[in-house]
Image 1 (tube, rainbow, N blue to C red):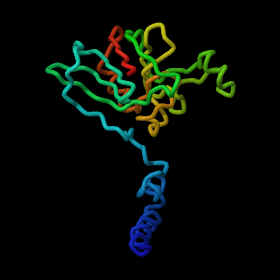
Image 2 (tube, helix red, strand yellow):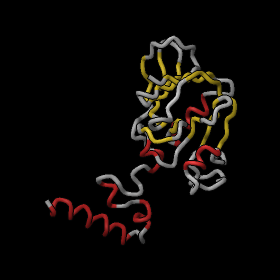
Image 3 (cartoon, rainbow, N blue to C red):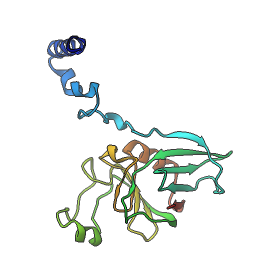
Image 4 (cartoon, rainbow, N blue to C red):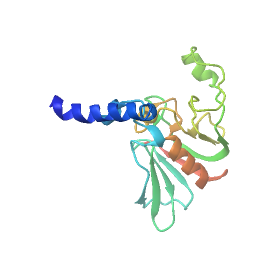
Length: 192
């Protein structure tokens, strides 16, 4: 078994050495089995975006968030929808209702609300937008709530219940959705 893995790893090391280490910067041998730092590189999504049949009674262009499925649907024409994997609020932070997107921001700054700071005084009071920012590449603000549909720098949380009520998407997926919807889009949050 060890010899089975030794040859490919030796070949990678030799190739890395002969290319001046350029390959080593882009490839970590732990990525072969998962878990390395490049495992989610390029916006890879643990729950791929897909077009599905959708029989809800919502107008095309409506966003439907199903918290129990941990999926977000953008309703299309002809009984179809784009389905995205999302992260949802953890126990005690899930909610339901109907709102509109009231603002959209690219690489948004993040100022944790006072309620979150009361629970987590260790958080920064403000973070400029960027790759380290927990709101990720895009954010769509939901009505007068504290909640957003936003990107994440933690793609491994997609499909999980870990947020304080916001809906997390991979940066690739949130950028795709952001380009398809506008301010005023109806967002229906189902919390069954």
